[in-house]
Amino acid sequence: MGLFDSLLKTGLSGLGSGSQPHPGMTVATGLLEMLTSQQGGGLIGLVQGFEQNGLGHIVSSWVSTGENMPVSGGQVQSALGNEVISSLAQRAGVSPDVASSLLAQALPGIVDKLTPDGNIPEGGNLGEQALNILKGLKF
Image 1 (cartoon, rainbow, N blue to C red):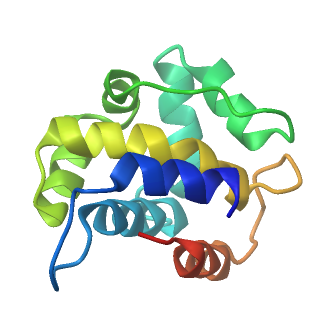
Image 2: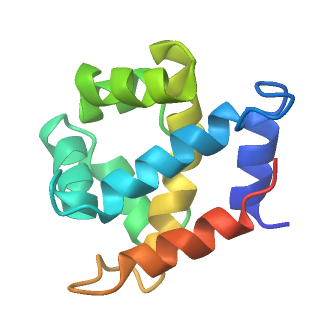
């Protein structure tokens, strides 16, 4: 199990049960949809959101091939905005604070996996990469 999977499993354990989709998986799926969509600016839009909120050094570490810097739920909320966080939270059936925390744990690994060469892919198939990331998640 890779570091990304370990972080997700540790950070998201105990939040879901039964036949309902795991809240962490729902948040991760919504995030990947957002990152692969051209409508919301995709991965580039996410990077710009972090940069505009003084968090460019953090998101740059995720894109680069080096170690990923951690991020807090509050920083994620600042970068993505209340509307995005609320939408993902509602979809997962969790509070915005929980959604922000889940995203803070998942974002570094997801962005890292979407940018394996240390660059944001131009015209690449992020949808296929996102599907492979979701298939690899274990809850």
